[in-house]
Image (cartoon, rainbow, N blue to C red; front, side):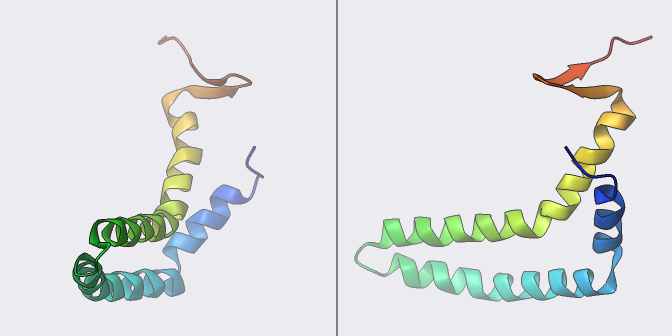
Length: 96
């Protein structure tokens, strides 16, 4: 269950200049670094495994970078769509 400040905290985070600078830096770094890492990994004797490791790492980093925005969307969506939480998961309210 989200605490009452989580939505406001996430809204402030994703709108902050520091977060936006961090995202820009991360995207620039990975756009240069990732292709080089993939090429280097592919040239190793265990290339397929190494490429999978690099790809997995890139996916995990992307998941961390997109978490605040995705979590905020999750927090806002149930209220906007008429969906509510129940102990078993989501319940969709019948249209009125």
